[in-house]
Image 1: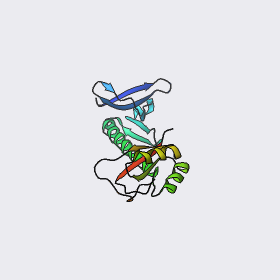
Image 2: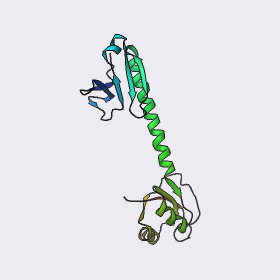
Image 3: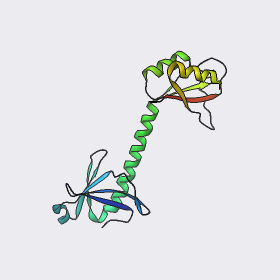
Image 4: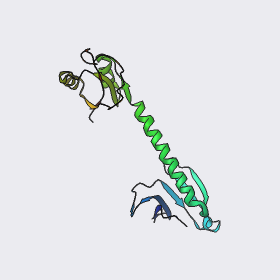
Length: 166
């Protein structure tokens, strides 16, 4: 009935199967789908797939369950990735001067993108004043959101992602 690419666990409480992908001989530890296969469904040669992220119920023929599981898992992965990307994008704020930087640090969660001159004294001042530290300087295509350092106003060529440690 099921392909080798899926692993299943039976929930003894309500008799449902929980499905996930297998890699080699080890099952991936995240399972996002419940497969309900009650006796009346067996008679109809079908089962119900329930997405755990949206609670959407999908009735599937047992003959098509492999293909449908692969499709549903792929859709779920894409949906979760897009949701995570949107969340990340909504939690990155640009700062162009020090007052804006401090205001963002005090009022908004997430990361602050700002230009930095590379001087350790500026980095230390930002850390002392706001408890925000540098988290990442992207490689390669450095975007210039400003020409000056967010802290001292000197020429800056490094875009830095700043954030608080929680």
